[in-house]
Each structure stands twice: as C-alpha cells, then as structure tokens.
Length: 572
Image (tube, rainbow, N blue to C red):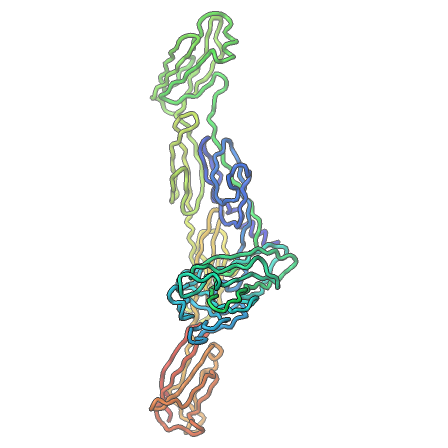
C-alpha cells in the first residue's frame, strides 16, 4: 500500500502534459498525456477515440476533461538489460563464453551467452549484426540464444518479491538471429511467459526480420502471492534456425492514475437588451422595430429616432438611417482600448431608457503555463521561457490579443562520482545534479545520491509535475592482473622461489584458464588448465636444465574479456 501511494503521489500528477488553459469559442486545444499504459478520456462523447493518449477538443463552454490509465512503476527485475553479465538469473540452457564448437560460442543447440554483438557469438550471425536493444550498439549487452528443439525449456528465470493483489506487467524484447535478412516462419523462435509454474498468455513468435527488436508483454495479478518465479519458455520443437536474442526484461507493478485538465472558454460579452458590441472601424446596425420592447413602448404615431446620449471619448460616431427602418452607427479608427456609446430610441410620446453599444478593439487576456523542452500553442512552437502574444479573431469578429507567460523547463540530469579511483577502494557515491524534485534510480532508490560498491550501469530518472529526464553512469569492471614469477630456483633447496603458481587472491576471479611452458625448441613439456597449479621446475619428475623457458597463459576474468599473456621463466 505504501508503494502504491508513493507511485500515485509522485507520478500520477505528471500524467497530463497539457495544463489548464484558456481559449476562445471556435478554437481547438490539444490534450496531451504520457507515462500511462492505457488511456480512457471522459466525457467519452467529446472524443472520436477516447483511448488515444493525445486528443484535440473544441469546447463551446468551459469543460473539465479527465484521463485515467495505468502507470507502470519501476522495474523489479535484476539485471534485465544484462549489463552486469551472466548474473541475477538462471537458465535451463548451457552458458558458454568460448567456442562450444566450430560454429562459435553458441554453436550448439541449447546454449547461450551474454555479449555485445551477434557477430561475436556465431559464425553465421556476422552479416546481419544484432546489437542490444538498450543502446543499439556495441556499448550494451544482451542474451544470445541458440534455441533447443524441446518445448517448455526455461530460457530465462528469476525469482522476485511482489506485492499481493496487484497487477504486474511482464515485458521482454526479442530479436531473431540468422545469416539472412529474414528467417523462415517455421524456424522462428516460439516463446511464452510463465509465472509460478503457470503459462500466461499465448505463445509469441520472434520477428521475421533478422536483428529487429520487438516487444512482447503480459499482465498478471499477484493475488495472494508475495513471490513470483517468472520464466520465459522456448516452445519451439525445431532444432535448426530458432536462434534469438533477449534484452530489457522487466516486471513492474501497475497502478491506476487519474488526472484532469480544465479548458476555459471565453465567450464574447454580448449585451443585455438594446446593448450590442461593435469593432472599431465598423458599422453597427440597429433595427428598432425588430425590438419588441421598443415596439411596445412607442404607442403614438410619429418618427422613431436614435438619440446619442454620450459619445465615446476616443472615437467619432455618426448615426444615419430613416425612421422606422435602420440606424447605422459608424465608428472611426481613432481610439485606444475599449469604449462605450450610450444611446436611446425616441418616438413621438417619449424616449426609452439608455442602451449601450460597446466599442471594442478586441479582447485582451493572458494566462500562464509550464512545459518541458518546448510548448505548442495555436500553431506555434516555443522552446524558451518568455512572454508571447498572439492576435486572434474572436467570435464577434474583433481582433483580440492573448498573452502567454511561458516557463520552459530544461530536463537536464547528470550523475557525478565522488571517487574516480573506484578500482582502488571499490566504493563510491553517485550524486545527481538536476533541478528536478523527484528521483528514481535503477536500483529502486529515491534519494539524490547512491552508494555503490559494484561495477555496472546505474541510471536515474528525475521528474516533476511537467516532465522527466534520465542519466546513465557506468562503472567499468576493474582489470584483473595475473602475475607469474620470471625466476625460480628449485635446485637450491632453500625454500625460496622453488615454484611458480597463480596468486591465490585472484584465482576466484578467473573463469577459464590454460597455461603451457615450452623448451627452447618450442616443445610443450608442461601444460595445465587448473588455476590452482604449482610447477616446481621438474619434467617427468626430474629438475629441468637451468635456462630460460617460454610460457603462454590464457585466461578469462569475471569481466568476460579473454586475456592472453606470453613471457619467460628463468630456472637457476
């Protein structure tokens, strides 16, 4: 419940990009919303499709519009983008980092690896290279899989804690791998989601086009569950060709959000009886006999004439027209701002009360708004803070001026580290530099700083009521240096420098290992794949002749990048 309240408090108020605004009758205004998975606008009768995220409305009266949808809050999957390598998940397939056969690292069915390019993992995948979905280049990593031909095999699995009685969305991105631009439909990977041992949703098929990412998802309610074992299953039974890549796997709670925006409609101030509006430089026509009040008032025979009681202070007015017919008031252009003309209609027996003609240069109004990066208003786009005027035509035909007081927010987010020498101390603090109010780290933390003790990719999203911004910070894996002594003295029997071995402190960081020693003719007389080896200068249980011997060492550290090192050992 506390997480749900946090999600709504910090994110539901940023659903609508459009803020409360003011328009004139006849104008349209775009209603823009974002950050929701689904959309429903009310009142539904105001929209052609009430489920589109963005709408355009032209109300004739002030109206409040409501949008409701579901907000996807965070990602509780660990290492869903595989930037940390083969960690945080399990698989029913075999993990390889070196060639499994002559075709490459995943040359065999039922194998997978974590890498930055499909060209590195299989001899047939270099023509149409598939990079990861997160970055789209060799900077990122993803999971490359050589699909097996047995159904219900777990490709990827993770156990996570969930909130009971909450909707969650399970998302993955899938790409097909192959040597052609397209893959045969019979060979495409067929995958399916599974949660707590039950498949959810239908089987989905990887894209036909090679190296093109496509998103698949299913929504699941946790019910009484507090943990979820989430799986991606391979349901294909074809051995050849069903090769694919997975990336950006996420599992997120969903909460209902509602937001509203009010569009105020300015309606021209039409007069009361015998009161009208006119624009400068125009003509106002009065039909006295069409007014029932005047017709009832003038009971005696005789002319009906207009009488000007008060002229406007900034305009010349002339009145023309025949009695009982039409009176024309001609207004000049020489006035500033709004003004009034007081007149009355007189007939033989008396004159009626005064009526008013409002002389208008147009309506002047102003409003304020805030936007992220840029703001669109009535066909114009603004990208900087300032005051902007637009001249519009009101319903009465008069030119009007509307002033927008606009604030543009720059969604800049940066991450700085207080310890650039991470590999020396294995700890640092990442701090956010931003003007945003709220922050969400990829770890789930919501502070302005993050204490880090492990290499990896860290990201933070800053947000406020109007927009959000994102920054990434990568802490590279620290290089492992494997030291081999270059001199040993096994013949002296003094207990010093009697043998060579790998320092114990780095052995646990080495995944694959191979070590060979050669004599002067290039023949191998010592070889091992055991990282815990010890060579005491003997060959076939006898000390070798004093001299210089060459060695070749190959190893793969936990960073995943193979290392090859050559050197020499002097035996004395």
